[in-house]
Amino acid sequence: PAARGRTGPGARPARGPGGPRPGAPKTIRLGSPRPRLRLVGVGLTLVMLAFVVRLVQVQAVDASTYAGKAERNRYVGQVLAADRGEITDRNGVALATSEDAYDITADPTMFAPDELKIDDGPEQAAALLAPILGADPEDLVRKLRPDNPALRYVKLAGRQTPQVWRQIKDLRSALAAKSETDPSTVNVLAGIFSVPTSKRVYPNNELAAGILGWVNAEGKGSGGVELQLEKRLAGEDGKIRYAQSGGRLVPTAGSTETPAVPGDDIELTIDRDIQWAAQNAISKQVEESAADRGYVIVQDTRTGEVLAMANAPGFDPNDLSDADPGTLGNAALQDAFEPGSTAKVLSMAAVLEEKAATPGTHVVVPNRLHRGDRLFKDDIDHPTWYLTLNGVLAKSSNIGTILATGQLGKTQSQANKVLYDYLRKFGLGSHTGLGFPGETKGILAPPDQWSTSQQYTIPFGQGVSINAMQAASVYSTIANGGVRVEPTLVRGSKGPDGRFTPAPEPERTRVVSEKTAKTLAQMLESVVDDEEGTGTKARIPGYRVAGKTGTANRVDPATGKYHGYTSSFAGFAPADKPRITVYCVIQNATQGSYFGGQICGPVFKQVMEFSLKSLQVPPTGAAPAALPVTFKP
Image (cartoon, rainbow, N blue to C red; front, side):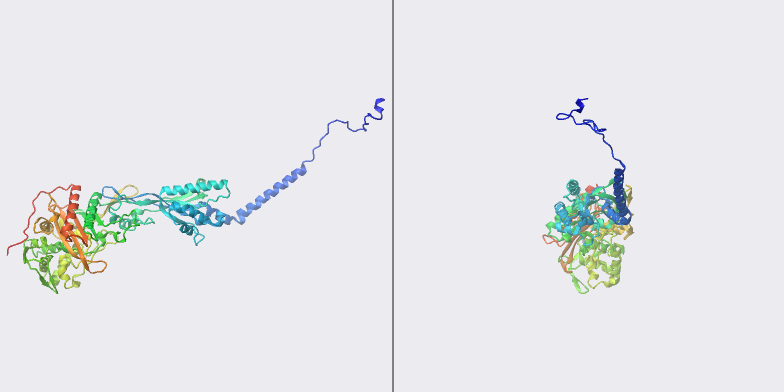
């Protein structure tokens, strides 16, 4: 007790009453949680209130504005191009087909400054696309920044290969990925899209180009069968609408689609091999003769089907950039020309059918013949010829033909009327029935409009104009026993269901009797077989050939005046059991001979020989009639 009361140095301080002892643990008291909870609640309420206000603004006040913006940037509509039908030859060999391709398109609204947040979006995109598309950057910029700011669709390039689109797509994806990690990168290709389509391909290049035509940059037929049968070949395009983001499809957003309907496949009557032989033969002869152009037609005499229709020079429908505009089209159907002596068979048909003469009728042919206001002559000067009617055709005498057709009526005007009626029956002055774009029906005036000279020139093929198909059809009519079968180029079509639909049967018309046709065939044999004939270069060993040469004054289409010659040869074989007609024309040969028998006769022979062998047509083996050509006075 004394120690507790000690004072001075070393003494412990006195502990106050009730106070804690030094060194004892302190007691921590917690404050009331209610103030803090109230503060957090107020904060959360303010945050939620801000969200609610924003939601009301977006979903109610500005709903239409944001919905339109989302719709514009999210949904894209595209056309689904229908697969264009193939064009094949009669054996199913492809002459025109299609390959996968893409139209490169853009939505210009996605290149606006308020969308990309930059002012030069179109320029940056054009700089990236131009080397890939091989396009002018300035042209691309004009398309991406159109005058109409609401424009949603432009085509930047048509029918690009899959490789081109893949390159653009990879570049667009790379920009999109980089923009997600680098805010300074802008995906300037987000508004670039593709539309699946197809590119027309002609695997045989120039072969049958005049028949097939071509397809333009818009995918539409612009010539030939491609144009003629555009609706059937093109099919019906479909549509698709889908959501996208950054140029990528959003698969969960749904889409609407109307499928495309493929076009029909068209099977032509053309035989590719015969077409090749015809085109090869005429091309060589046109080149050798330094001629303006030439054409060859091969026709099945029984069915009217066109097996070949070749033009030279031609064009490659795969690439028209270097094509001569004058070679586009199908000159065999679009050229109107005066046929010359190949038309004499029409005059002989009228004379025989009207029984005005027979093949053996004697015709005295002077060196000159005065008719109307003109002196007429043959292609060579000669003493008086003593020919049979058969000889008039074999030697291709203009004077003899005038004399023979003069027997068709008691007066010249009556004779003109009778001849005109037969020309019309054979198809002159009318379209052939092919329905081919740009086909000419020629020029055949009514007989009361024939000039004084035309009354005597039309019988030997001058003063009247035809196309090559009309001329070939005349000879096929004779070969077919006097029945004209309307020419055809289409055998049928195959729809998307794979079902083949044959073309309608061609119209058949009796023109002359079977007897007249048979007699004419025998007379035409004399042109080729008889040494007096003008068509000896058309002979084919083992086959009987009926044919006729032609060398006519040619009307220059540029000046409308006579200049140069139209050289031709028409015929069929076997003469006594016809199967094939071949007609050859060369316009304005300027090198070597210009006579039809000399330059078209060999072409006829080459094409006919190939066709007979290709179709396995055997020789008949029968001897020709050998009708007399001359008589002794």
